[in-house]
Amino acid sequence: VPRDAFSGHVDLLLLSVLARGPDHGYGLIDALRDRSGGAFDLAEGTVYPALYRLERAGLVTSTWREVAGRRRRVYRLTRRGTEALRRRRSEWREQVRAVETVLA
Amino acid sequence: VIEEYLRELGRLLPSTRRTRFLREAESHLRDRANALIAAGETVPEAERKAVESFGPVAVVAQAFAAAAAVYAVRRGTVLAVAALAALVVPLYLVPENTFGPAQWEAKPDSVAVTQLVALAAWLVSLALGAVAVAALLADRPRAAATLVTGAVASGLTTGVAMLVAGAVWLDHAPWTPLWATLGLMLPATAVLLGTAAGALAWVRARRPLLVSD
Image (cartoon, rainbow over all chains, first blue to last red; front, side, top):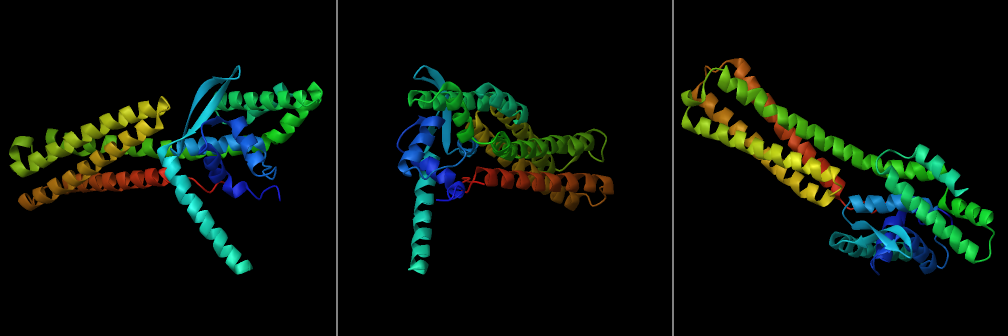
C-alpha cells in the first residue's frame, strides 16, 4: 500500500477507532496500524494535528489523564463525532461500491 | 535524540498550543522508544526509530501549523466582526441622539422604540461576544460556539431594527440630512453584511472536517 494511501482518510479512520472507546494518540496510532494489518504507515506525528482539527470541529474532546504512569491527552468521540462518523462511513461505502462497479 | 527532535519541533511549532503539542509528542516518542527497547533495541537505536516513525520535524510542524491556522483565521474573523459590530451602534445612534437632527423625544414613538430595541440587542450582542471570547481563551470551544451563535442572532436583530428605524424615520422625516441617512444606512448594512459573513465563516468552520490534507 502506498505511504500516502490513507492520508485523505485519516479523520474517518481516527473517528472509527475512537468509536471503540476513548484512547490517547499513541494508542490510537497502534490500533490503526493493527486494524489495517500494518498498512497504515503515515508519519505518526501528523496524527496529532488531525486529532486537534477533529477536536476543534467538535467531533472529539480531549483531557489530560494519568495513564500507565504518564500524563497523556485522552481523546473521546462526541455525539456530533458519532453522527459524523455514521454519515461519513455510509458515504465511503457508497464511493467504494461505485468504484468497484466501474472496476468490475 | 528525542530531546533534540523536541527542541527542533518546539522551534518550528506555531505558538498556539505549542506546549500541549510538545507534551503529546514527547509522551508519544517515549512510549514508542520504550516499546522498542522492550523488544530488544538499544536505547539510541530505539530513540532514532521512534523519531523516524514520528516523521520529519518540518512535515509534522507544518501539519500542526495548518491545523492551528484554520482556527486562528476563524478566531480572527469572529473578533473582526465583533469589533465592527461594537463600533456600528455608537457610530450612528449615539451621535444621532446627542448632536444629530433629532433627540429621542423628538422622534415618532415607533422610531425611538425601534432604535432602543437596536441598542438593547447591540448591548446583548456585545455581552455575549465578550463572554464568547473569554470561553475561547479558556479553551471551551463548544460554549464559545453557542455564545457566538447568540451574539450573531442578536447582531442581526440590531441590524434589522436599525434598518426598520431608518425606513420608518425617513418616511416621517424626509428632511433628515444626508449625513444622518448615510450614517444610518451604511453602518446598518455593514452590521448585516458583517454578521452574515461571520455566521457563514462560523458555519463553515463548524462543518465536520472529514477530508484531511
